[in-house]
Image 1 (cartoon, chains in turn yellow, orange):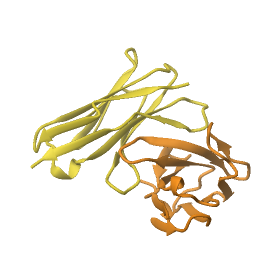
Image 2 (image 1 turned 30 degrees about the vertical axis):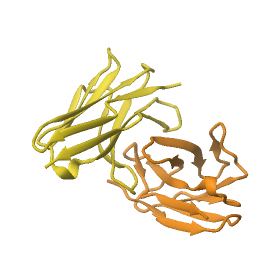
Image 3 (image 1 turned 30 degrees about the horizontal axis):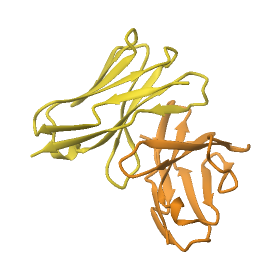
Image 4 (image 1 turned 120 degrees about the vertical axis):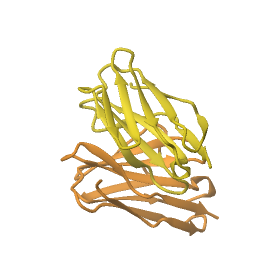
Amino acid sequence: GENVEQHPSTLSVQEGDSAVIKCTYSDSASNYFPWYKQELGKGPQLIIDIRSNVGEKKDQRIAVTLNKTAKHFSLHITETQPEDSAVYFCAASIPNAGNMLTFGGGTRLMVKP
Amino acid sequence: GAVVSQHPSRVICKSGTSVKIECRSLDFQATTMFWYRQFPKKSLMLMATSNEGSKATYEQGVEKDKFLINHASLTLSTLTVTSAHPEDSSFYICSAFDTNNEKLFFGSGTQLSVL
């Protein structure tokens, strides 16, 4: 089955700096890669996603890049703000797998004011 | 994004009682919903896949008689923790797949504490 590795597990940045979280996946058939943000005591919130037919997608301060050859994808957050502090999860989905996502282990991002 | 409503957000119960958690997709129909369990500072652990009108598919190690799942309509799935014990205390989260947008949305989670 699919295996998703996520790094780093914790990331501390200064407000205004950029943050990058990286994930690798094992199954080359994976074609959908969402990113979720989870705040303490809440459910994960979908913040951005990318499908395998594009290499990059951007939404304001958030961007995701995908390298299908290397089987890795990354989340980039620019001009970080304290409210960006949360746990971020990457995930990958294989077509015809019942819409199931395989999640990475999560990254705890701390943005210091 | 689409909205998935999960209730209750927090429940405290005595050992031996059963607890029902509801998951509703508010603005879309979901033929597939998923139930997860999350331990503190850990990732999401898939418990089962709930399919409307059919039996749920449970992950290895998850007791189907312990965690009863019902997906009676395209907008509602329920998880019942039967005869709950302190070791069942955890954060339970549901998600629903929006087939129109092909995206997965999560509920807000339920913190279960069994005394």
